[in-house]
Image (cartoon, rainbow, N blue to C red; front, side, top):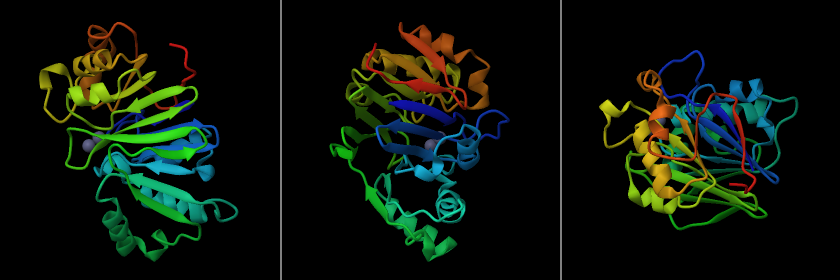
Length: 256
Ligand SMILES: [Zn+2]
Ligand SMILES: [Zn+2]
């Protein structure tokens, strides 16, 4: 399994970090997780097979996590030399379907019938969706918005967990237990902690409780970058801690 960080930022404009967006390759699966502003152009910059996207998974409905979805769908229809024909499956938390209907109201009915089969799935905790042979997607509710979820992707190589946006949560840590890579939001410095986001120390504690193989920090608002988030997280978690940059690639190969 291979993770490419497309966007390690937030809604804050940044010259180096676009909004939330991650690309996971596993077997024949090409999964886009979140689709914030900048996703399409980052896909081109980093040379991922955007036209071959098989699945999308949205963590919640804040604009920096799915604001570029209409443009992404438009690109699948008009952005390549020939229109797409293969099916696209779109996963998201409860409330996804009415929101896609609303997008169709705003942008046109092609959103619902873009010229290729589109499947819309409101994913629930405890469900296990096989995206391709041996590659599974699961979710867990998070403490951020009413609908927000974290995602787990498992294949024969191992397991990665993406927190989406969340607050501190032992439940989430227990659910993530034993993952090879924890991709954790790290929004705010420790002295500005709130219930609905994580600080570096909280991300480190989450990784420790989850017994993660390594911790990749992402989703940085500018103030958290001023406090050396890796050092703060590493004080709580003894294994490898990395601050993601746009374009970083992580391979999950089962070696811990
Ligand atoms: Zn966010
Ligand atoms: Zn959010």
